[in-house]
Each structure stands twice: as structure tokens, then as C-alpha cells.
Length: 569
Ligand SMILES: [Zn+2]
Figure 1 (cartoon, rainbow, N blue to C red):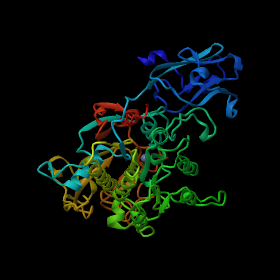
Figure 2 (figure 1 turned 90 degrees about the vertical axis):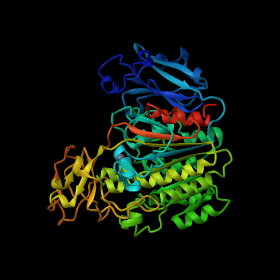
Figure 3 (figure 1 turned 180 degrees about the vertical axis):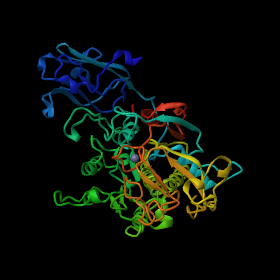
Figure 4 (figure 1 turned 30 degrees about the vertical axis):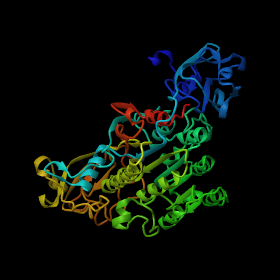
């Protein structure tokens, strides 16, 4: 219905040069859902250089400057583009309702409608814990359940913690520019409630040259600190600057802006920051500032490994902690606990995600106003890009263990909303088993239907991990989109593939007998698998979780968290 009001013509600007009176573009975009009191930048892009006196922007008929209480800045030829920009930065609206924004310059005009929503008085939840399984798809969950709980006569030996929750919804993940999202704009939807485009964090993708100049929207971490004084935690096992954790604090069109993202972490100062990615914090030739030192000066305890983390957390006075446990991404569960590959020999004392979560909860609960904690199991995605499902599934099991830690924390209280959600899918499916006794080629080994039987992984240990993934009848998880590669049909024991690439097998094994050459179906430039646009499964428990059912848009996750915390009051 709101579609009928607005007809913002995104993308038309490029063709506008030769055409007079083309509609301009307005940010936030049509059908944006905006929390009352949350900060956003209003930007209107007019084609060409209309006279400032001809530019008119209204909100529900009232001059925008008056409606938002701020004078606009009008910039002709912004960033050298043939456009004039109208900005009101740091705006907010305090009442709920439909707001129609109309912009005109001469005969060119456009309008969008915003849905500004309030949250009910009071707070349902004192704490919110948002778990992100990066790229976690249905097949990852199913395989994690088979490996960690076992399956016999068609029944599982138990439930995963991520599945055993009272509320569930299908979540759509598309961004403003594409049916396929990346972790940056999908995290922006979760942390701000606004849709954005591939590679963008906490901004709309306007026409700006500089990555930091695009129109900003406030994140839940900023809102929780500014409005309620809550503690905030950001915990991952990827680089802390990677898109998902960065989505809590960052405002940039370019997710690869790691040094700016470190500065943004410092500006927002989440109370607990844990992950990999130490390198961008260190002094460089062109920037001699040590951000580790700056955080220490700001009162943060620092931990570089699991032992130091334990020691710092044990001190009752520790309320702020920066933990950086690897120069790059941390190692996943299969390498850390079993194979000792990846960077484990260089970083032998990295904490598990469960230890990070346990410590974060211990410290964040020292804030008597409550907290917002984001936890990412981030390598599920990276291993899936490498078509390495065993490593991805071990990190799904690790996520499950971390969720159990949070459920145990919440069990003794009724004030903690827990949400578990992937940010997007991968095109991965369980189609049967590979049975080494069934033949010598991969196609002979692949067993389907009745021939597939059940895999022969040994029973899982206390944490839910089978002692070995290298068994004679193993799951056949296959990917639907891939570059040219050699499929060994067995776990990649020599170590994880280079980031963003499929495994490069040693020459003697490369397409050795028993493996299958896969002629890729992705464009020839592809070096790894890609995300899927399939819906993902969200599960939730605790106060405020009841809004999750049926099919929802990914922006609803922000709205549910904001509502549970009463952030719009
Ligand atoms: Zn990815």
C-alpha cells in the first residue's frame, strides 16, 4: 500500500545527465522503517545544479528543515558528480506514523513514505543476545545434528540448542541492490532496521565518492548505549573488523575499510570486544597509533589469548575488555581441537566461542542496566565459500555450544531475549553418503536413497564433536554453485583452503583417481562458492521472541530487538 505513495527511482541518476526533469533519489528510501528517536541522515540527490531557491523538501507537507529542526546543507556538484545534494545529517523523528517525504526542484519531483515506529512503554527484556551463524543454511544444521546427536532408524539422538527454541521464522535476506546479500548489508538490516546494499555497513548506498560520506543510520549498539546506557558486547571468531561484527558499530560504504572500522569501534566503545583481526589495531608506518594502547588508556583490559582472557575476566573490577586472539581470522573448531592445522601452531591458545561467550556474559552482566551482546560464528561462511562443509559444520556445532551457554545464563531469569539467525545462506544440500566400500570413483561411492544408509561417524564427545570426520561412510553435502575444482569427496585434512578459494590439493592428489573434476557453473572469474538467496531459519526464546513466526523480512530482527528493549521510548 505504501508503494502507491512513493516511487523513488533509484539508479535513474546515472541516466539523468541527458534527461531534464528526472526524479531525484531520497534516503532513507521508500518503505524505510525508522525507530522513533533513532538518528539517520536525510539525503536527497537532485540531478544537475538546480538553484537552491528551487529546491524544496517537505515531510508531511512541512519544510523538512522545520520538521527535523535542522538547517539543510546543499552541495552542488557533490564529489564531482553532476548532482546537487541536500543533506540533513543526524536527524530523528519522535512520533510514530507514516511520513511522506516530497522533494522537488523545478519540474523534477519524487516522494517516498517512511514507516516511523515507536516501541511500547517499558521494557520486555533487560538483555538481548543476538547469535549470527554466518552463512548457516539448513544443511549445516542437519549435518550438525547428525554429527553431534547421532541418528538411528531415522530418529536423532537429541536436539540442537539452536533448534530447541519456542519461536521460529523464515527470514528473507535480500538487500536494496540485489536478491543476493553479503554479510555487510544483511548485518546492517539486523543492527539498524534499514536495508542497504552489498559491501555497505550502517549507511544507505547513495551517490558519494568517499566511503564514509554516505547517509548513515544508527546501530543498535549506538542506540543501546546512548538511550539506555546498556553494556554492549561484540564477539566473533573472525577478524573483529569483518562485516558481521563491524555491523554493530560501522558506517561505511566499504566493508574492507578495516582501519576506519577500528576507529569506529573506538568511537562507539563496546564494553566487550573479542575476536581475531589484531593486525589493523597495530601501529603502522603511515599511522603510528596503537589502538590496543588507546583502548587500554580508555580503561580496557586486554587479552591476546585464552589464558589472559580467563585471568582478566576473573578480576571483579574488569568491565571493559578487548580480546584479540589472532592477527587474522581465528581458527575453527576442527583445526583448533582436532587437526591442529591453519594457524593453530602460531596461535596455540585461542579461546573457543563458548569461552568467549561465557566471559562476555560474566562481564556484561556487571552492568546493572542490562546489555546487548552480538555473537558470531563467522567461519561457517568462510569454509562454505571453500566448499569445505566439515569445517563449516564443526563451527555450526560450536555455535550450538555457545548458544547453550547463553540459554543456561538465561534459564535462571526471565529477562533475556536470545535470537539465533544466519545472515544469508549458501547453496548447500545433503544428498546422501559417500561410501568408500561402494566403489573407487566418487560417483560409485556416492550413495543415495536406500543405498545411502547412515554415516559411521563415531559418537560425539562432550562438546558434540565426533573424534574424526575421516570415516569410511560419510555425509555427502554438495554445493550447487562452484568454480572449476577437484572434489575429493572427503575432508580436507591438510588444512583449510586459502580464504576465498576452493582447496588447492597437493599436486599428487589433484584430481587423483577417486576424486571428481567439477566443471564450474559460476562465472570464470569465480575462485570460490557464493551465497544463496534462499531464506534462512531464525529461532528465538525469551521475552519479545513471540513476534518471530511465519516469514519475515530481515529488518524485523532489529525491530524485535528494539521493541523488546524499549529503545524507541
Ligand atoms: Zn560469505
